[in-house]
Image (cartoon, rainbow, N blue to C red; front, side, top):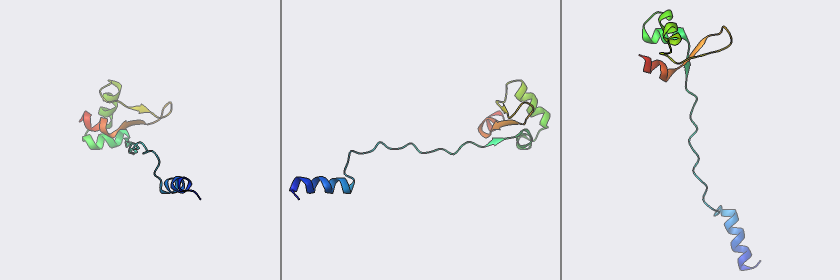
Amino acid sequence: MSEVARKGASEASSGMSAPEEPREALKAPERRMTVPEVAALARCHQQTVRRAIEAGMLPATRRGKKGVWLIHQSDAEAWL
Protein backbone atom coordinates (compact mmCIF):
# COMPACT_ATOMS: atom_id res chain seq x y z
CA MET A 1 0.00 0.00 0.00
CA SER A 2 1.38 3.41 -0.88
CA GLU A 3 2.02 6.12 1.69
CA VAL A 4 -0.88 8.26 0.40
CA ALA A 5 -3.31 5.34 0.44
CA ARG A 6 -2.22 4.42 3.97
CA LYS A 7 -2.65 8.00 5.17
CA GLY A 8 -6.15 8.24 3.63
CA ALA A 9 -7.20 4.93 5.15
CA SER A 10 -5.98 5.92 8.61
CA GLU A 11 -7.81 9.27 8.45
CA ALA A 12 -11.02 7.55 7.40
CA SER A 13 -10.80 4.97 10.15
CA SER A 14 -9.84 7.46 12.86
CA GLY A 15 -12.76 9.78 12.14
CA MET A 16 -10.58 12.70 11.07
CA SER A 17 -13.21 14.04 8.69
CA ALA A 18 -14.64 17.54 8.74
CA PRO A 19 -15.96 18.49 12.19
CA GLU A 20 -19.67 17.96 12.63
CA GLU A 21 -21.94 20.77 13.67
CA PRO A 22 -23.02 20.46 17.31
CA ARG A 23 -26.47 19.00 17.74
CA GLU A 24 -29.03 20.93 19.67
CA ALA A 25 -29.98 19.30 22.91
CA LEU A 26 -33.29 17.52 22.66
CA LYS A 27 -35.80 19.08 24.98
CA ALA A 28 -38.32 16.95 26.79
CA PRO A 29 -41.88 17.90 25.98
CA GLU A 30 -43.37 20.26 28.51
CA ARG A 31 -45.83 18.74 30.95
CA ARG A 32 -49.48 19.50 30.32
CA MET A 33 -51.94 19.81 33.16
CA THR A 34 -55.69 19.32 33.38
CA VAL A 35 -58.15 21.79 34.90
CA PRO A 36 -58.32 19.91 38.23
CA GLU A 37 -54.51 19.85 38.46
CA VAL A 38 -54.24 23.59 37.78
CA ALA A 39 -57.02 24.29 40.30
CA ALA A 40 -55.15 22.29 42.94
CA LEU A 41 -51.93 24.15 42.15
CA ALA A 42 -53.68 27.52 42.33
CA ARG A 43 -55.81 26.50 45.33
CA CYS A 44 -58.96 27.65 43.62
CA HIS A 45 -62.16 26.11 42.23
CA GLN A 46 -62.05 24.32 38.88
CA GLN A 47 -64.66 26.72 37.50
CA THR A 48 -62.26 29.62 38.19
CA VAL A 49 -59.68 27.94 35.96
CA ARG A 50 -62.28 27.31 33.23
CA ARG A 51 -63.36 30.97 33.36
CA ALA A 52 -59.74 32.08 33.00
CA ILE A 53 -59.40 29.83 29.94
CA GLU A 54 -62.63 31.13 28.38
CA ALA A 55 -61.61 34.75 29.08
CA GLY A 56 -58.26 34.16 27.32
CA MET A 57 -56.25 34.77 30.48
CA LEU A 58 -54.96 31.19 30.58
CA PRO A 59 -53.88 29.57 27.28
CA ALA A 60 -55.19 26.02 26.88
CA THR A 61 -56.11 23.50 24.21
CA ARG A 62 -59.04 21.15 24.22
CA ARG A 63 -58.53 17.47 23.51
CA GLY A 64 -61.48 16.36 21.39
CA LYS A 65 -64.83 18.12 20.90
CA LYS A 66 -65.94 17.88 24.51
CA GLY A 67 -62.67 16.64 25.92
CA VAL A 68 -60.48 17.89 28.70
CA TRP A 69 -58.61 21.19 28.66
CA LEU A 70 -54.82 20.83 28.62
CA ILE A 71 -52.68 23.64 29.98
CA HIS A 72 -48.89 23.90 29.71
CA GLN A 73 -47.32 23.88 33.15
CA SER A 74 -45.39 27.10 32.44
CA ASP A 75 -48.65 28.86 31.43
CA ALA A 76 -50.32 27.68 34.64
CA GLU A 77 -47.41 28.94 36.73
CA ALA A 78 -47.40 32.28 34.89
CA TRP A 79 -51.16 32.64 35.50
CA LEU A 80 -50.59 32.32 39.23
